[in-house]
Image (cartoon, rainbow, N blue to C red; front, side, top):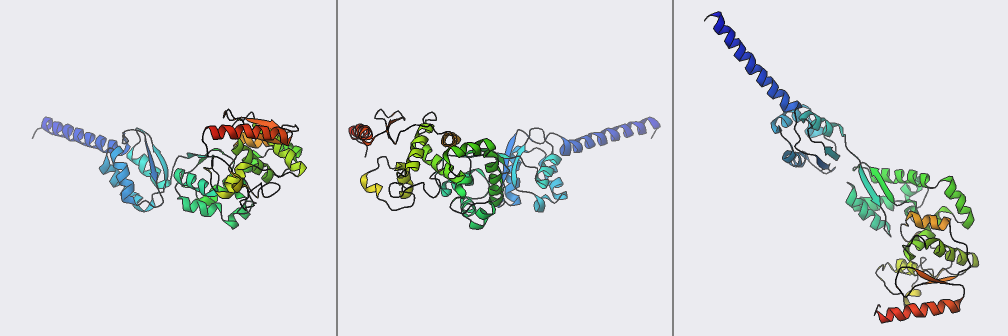
Length: 337
């Protein structure tokens, strides 16, 4: 075999080796993720379910299995919410799962009336199930750790959208919400509280009633002013939403006389003053409406018979009775029971 032939064999071998090396490099470092993909790995997930959910979006699957085995991913993967970006390599994906490099999720809490409803909402947005959330939201020791009791803990949650890791544990979530609560209660808001002489808990409780009475932000300060007047005069609040909460019947469209006698510390027809805790999670506009309540001499209000979401306000029982009769007549006309 002459030198020229040997050189050709060498070149062919080098080319084959180069192609093979490039192929191998691409398998581990090349574009392995076909398109952006969100991956949720629960604490209850096993390795088989993890790989099953990955395979449809991965190229170079053999390389993934090889590298995952080398890094013992089967026994070390971390649960969480992961965003796989298009073009990520096999090594990127394996290391992301091994070291728990997860992406936070946006968690919205609002429009709930009870800890059980809040637990359900959190269970739909985060890894822990609703039962685990409800245990945390009613846990006496955890409530005490953040400066509340199991009844008033619900008043700590400020409705908003927050970023959390999907796998956040319920107790860590509650601790974080305490910090958000402290951020919400700025020096300015605490200074405004002096107008009403209400505690933070009382502000949240009154705001929850205002929020249930109206969704009209521009009317909330006036309604808050009515209740402040009643509190100062020692007049029962007689707030219909507290009756619904006491009965846990939020579908009631018309409060009747028999409902007003329902025995409960939350029924403000039976009891003077504020209920023991909020009857819902009030929106921030309702909280600020209590802090900035309108000063006036109204004692009563009643929904307008126009059903536009606003109310008629009255200073005397005679005026209020006329407003109530007009509204009741419209209810009868519309056959609302």
